Amino acid sequence: MKLYNLKDPKEEVGFLQAVQLGLGKKQGLFFPKKLPILDHNTLDHLINMNFIDRSTQILSYFLNDEISLSNLKLIVKNSFSFQKPILKSITKNISCLELFHGPTLAFKDFGARFMAQILLFLNTKNKPMTILTATSGDTGAAVAHAFYKMKNIQVVILYPKGKISTLQEKLFCTLGHNVHTISINGSFDDCQNLVKKSFNDSLLNKKMHLTSANSINISRLLAQICYYFEAFSLTPIQHQKNLIISVPCGNFGNLTAGLLAKSLGLPIKNFIAATNSNNTVPNFLKNGVWEPKPTISTISNAMDISQPNNWPRVKELFLRKKWNLKTLKFGSVSEKQTKKTLKELYNLNYISEPHASIAYHLLKKKIKKNDFGLFLGTAHPSKFQTVVEKILKIDLSIPKILYMHNKKKILSHTLESDFQQLKHFLLKNL
Ligand SMILES: Cc1ncc(COP(=O)(O)O)c(C=O)c1O
Ligand SMILES: N[C@@H](CCOP(=O)(O)O)C(=O)O
Image 1 (cartoon, rainbow, N blue to C red):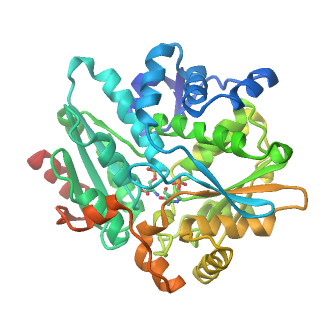
Image 2: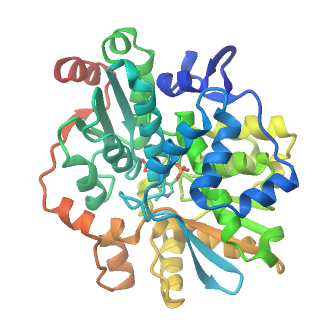
C-alpha cells in the first residue's frame, strides 16, 4: 500500500515504512493512496467469516503488496489473541459493542498489538527503535503491554499528570524494563505536541529511531477497521441496513477507522462523532471554524483532547469519497448529562463508564424510528472505578489485571511541558 503525506503529498511511502516513520515531513499524517472497494459478493462472504480470517482478509486488501497472506494471518492471530468484541443489548433498538475485553481492558489493544506484531515481523535486522507515545489514559497501557520486554524496543509514554484515573496509571506506569513513563505537568494535547516536536528533532531521531504508537501511526487505524466488520456481522440481519454507530471521540482515530470500513463498502448508514466538553470538532461541524480551546478536564478523561490528531484524515476521506461532511452526525455532552446517562444505563441493568455513556446519550438523541444503533464500549468500567462507584453508589468488582497492577509502585518521572527538558531526559536516560 502506498501512502501520501497529507501536508506534503509528494512524500510517498509504503506501509512498512509508514509504520516505522509514524509521521511524515512537516508532521504530516500518512493516508492511503488507493482506497479499496469491495463488491456485494465479497462483502457477504466476509461478513460470514470468523473474526481472525475476516480481519486477515480485510487487512490484505491494503497490505498484500508488502506482507504475504500467510504472514498476515499469523500477525493477525497473534495480535487479536483475546476475547473478540461482544454485543450487549441495552434496549430494543440499541446495543453496546464492547471492545474492552483485551489484555488492558480498552479498544486500544486491537491497534497497539497489531502495530507491535508488525514491528516484530519487520525487525529481522535487529534495528533498535523507540516508541514515543502520548496518552490520555488507555493508549499508554495498550502500547506498554503490547511492546513489554520486546527485544530492541524502548517504549516512552507521556501522560498528563493527575489527569488520568489511578487504575489507568497503575496499568502502565508500574511495568519497568523497556517501558519508561513520564507524567507531564500539562494536558494530553501538550503531551501530543511534545511527541510531534520530538519527531522534528534530528538528533533525537538519529539516536533513538523514533516512531509513534498513537493513532498517528497508520497501522493502529487499519487494525481498528476490523472490529467495525465484526460489529456489522453481530448486528441482527434485519437491522443491518439501518445501522448507526455512535463513537466516543477524543483523538478521532476510532471514528477514522469506522469511516475507512465504510469506504471499503461496509454499509453503515451513519456515524455519530460524540465528544465531551472538549468540542473542537462539534463546533467546527456547526460553524466551520477550527478553534481548539484549552483542554478541559472531565470524568471521560481519555477524551480530554482539544486538538484531535486524526481530523485531517477524516476530512481527506470525505473529500476523496465525495461524501458530504454535513452527513456526519455529532454532538458534545456535558458532565452533568454524562453522569445522568451513566445512571440511566445502570437502571437499564448495564454498568457502563463515562466515555461510552456519552456515545449512548447522543445515539439515543439522534436515532430514528427504523434505525438500529450501536454505541462503542471503549473501556472497561472498572478502569474508572472511583468515578463509576461514586456516581452509581455501587461497589465494582475489579478484574485481576487491575488488581495486580494496583498493588505495584508507580515508576514514572515527572517533567514540565517543555521540549528541551524532554529531549535532555531522553538523551540522558535511554
Ligand atoms: C475509553 C476511551 N474512549 C474513547 C476514546 C477516544 O478514542 P479516539 O481517540 O480514537 O477518538 C479513548 C481514547 O482515545 C478512550 O480511551
Ligand atoms: N484517548 C487516547 C488518546 C490517544 O489516542 P490515540 O488513539 O492517538 O493513541 C488514550 O487513551 O491515550
